[in-house]
Length: 265
Image (cartoon, rainbow, N blue to C red; front, side, top):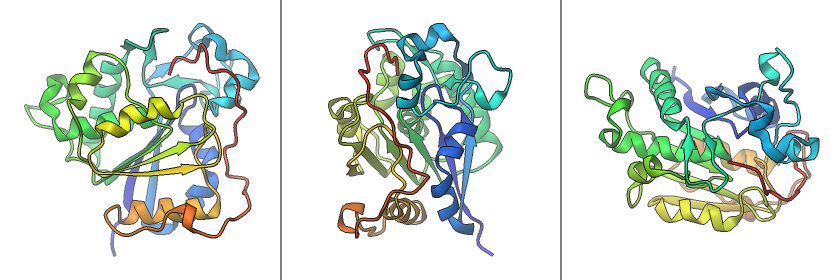
């Protein structure tokens, strides 16, 4: 019996593994037995001061994290991140710790690919690039070797290039892991111009857009596209745009679209 393809799932800023998994409920159910989605928490716990202008319910909803509660002791309500940026987005505080945390996860198991949303999408692309050139960040190595082979694929939804010198060094001029980049046409949290910087670094890219904002699209046509891509990223997978339009399902993570000033992704 063929083992399922295992995909590492990286949530967005202020989400956590539980929230991301619940919001992708329809997508999870559509994967069948051939794909295993493994959701993990970012190691950085956010506090009210970290959420800055995003503490209002509408802003947390826009980030896909309306369920979080910084005052709660419930881990499923704890907002998390992969790093914290300064207002200018030129420094990624905690990125080094997150990469070491991911190193330890990768050394324990094997994953075919990685799927990330928002800040998690940025980390997914960065991790893909680092596995191609692990010696660019020596602390990531274990006994001088990479902890894991390069991924076979990456899915980046509302992704962007992280700020800071470490990100620039890891990406270099480009990375080659096959990557599906998904962009929301009305995304005001990660605008298209910001995503384009990451697209320009991606050698083997496939770009899809959807009519919504800052969320992982999960209408039936998108679920089919994601499933086909995860099973065969180098195969011919029809674009959702070419499929018959279907009605939204409960798994769609629709978000309001407030001003993104103060959102430090």
